[in-house]
Amino acid sequence: MLVEGGAVAWIGPDEAAGAWTRGDEEVVELRGALVTPAFVDAHVHLTETGLRATGLELSGARSAREVLDAVAGAARGGSALVVGAGWDESTWPGGEEPPTRAQLAAAAGGAAVHLSRVDGHSALVSTALAERAGLRGLPGGEGDGPVRGAAHAAALDARWEALDAASADAARRAALRAAAAAGIGAVHEMSGPSLAPPGDLVALAALAGPGSGAERAEGREALPEVVPYLARALREPGEVAALVAELAAQGVRLAGVGGDLAVDGALGSRTAALREDYADAPGERGVLHLDADAVRAHLRACTLAGVQAAFHAVGDAALDVLAAALQDVARELGAPALGGRGHRVEHAVAAGAHVVEVLAHLGVGVSTQPAFDALWGAPAGTYERRLGPARAALLHPFAALAAAGVPLALGSDSPVTPLDPWGAVRAAAFPHREEHAVSVRAAFLAHTRGGHRLAGRGHPGVLRPGAPATYAVWEAGDLVVQAPDRRLSGWSTDARSGTPGLPDLAPGAPAPRCLRTAVDGALVHDELGG
Image (tube, rainbow, N blue to C red):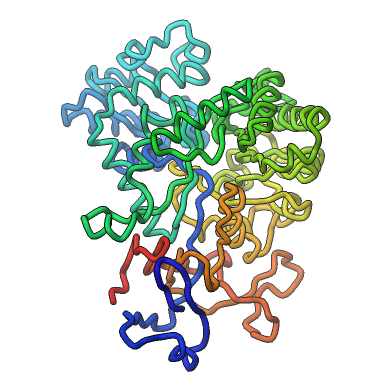
């Protein structure tokens, strides 16, 4: 592969390379490594991801006592704010409840404490942080347990206010470097109130991307690209246009208005909106953060403004609201008008047959997170505890979405799950329920080309002459063709099949290791050297 001026100039066999070279090129011998298009992570929270690297990592905690001990250890450093994430009480034995605010306050010695649950849709807070955030009387802040809803948003805002500019910049850089090291060339940043500190998208726009040759010569660090989304519910086309123009004047070219614009919450926090009660909490059906009128108004406004709308919707009741709004706007404005905007939905975890049909008919794409199934979809896992086996078996219908022609892109929702694109491909091809599986190749294309298409960027997402030289180099074993149907031959190394091989991602097989990542020809991660 010959790269010139940030683009792929030629691809072909070694013996034909001489006709395309001048003799002064830098030559990098790959020694059998695999070259692919760089991955696109279609749902991330960069600043939050970077902060998780320095805060308390609580995914390994198996009791309230272990959480409290971790908080006490962090507080001994004298910090006025203890931040952590990753706890998941559904994995604790005996149905133990999370620590109370008073217990956290005692462990922290009076320091403010904010500990996000693993799904990011609820948190534990100490008495000091609850007072700083003004949680008293806010919905979701009742009692002494995890905060949800409006109280959760207020607690997040209080935490962001305590973050200084230098720490925020370091967090953004750390997250983008981690993405580059994972073979990711672009990320879809899902920003919005409470999701990131004020001014986050403007700071990312100034920081991210490969930069020009002159900028790199002056010492600017080349980093993966950031495709920005902003979660703000709007009602009029003029409001949408004004927001897009306002951000453009600050150097931010919004790909869409929405993204993590939450119709509901998450299953683990019991805030995903359901038609029926949670199996482990009779009487609870989650929370609708946006009602039908708000979803319909935002969708209509974005369609008329010519801007992509994007919604976070997880539970079946939330997806019903979204599907109904899509049909209402399509009846008013026409299906072609709606379909031409390339609207998208994040997660769509509980999408049933009717929702899948509506999405396919109206050209609405889905940004899905297969690692959720890997993490929570096992028998007796979080999904089954929340919904029971029958309803849990219907979640993450990757195969049904793909078969219907719904545009798919894969993401991590980092820091909820790690920046691990091959892991996501593996999880989509080998989910806990075989009926939801897609082929490794289909998942790979959704995690490369699909991410560009879902953002409407016009980027081909493939390596061919004239395409951007955005690629990753991998240390990988044998390349195989893997079928999603376990009744068929699971793999083949026969080149006569005509299907390009990919690394063996069967459960237990070692994951490929990224050796180099380039964005528009600029190296953002490199272990190869010249």
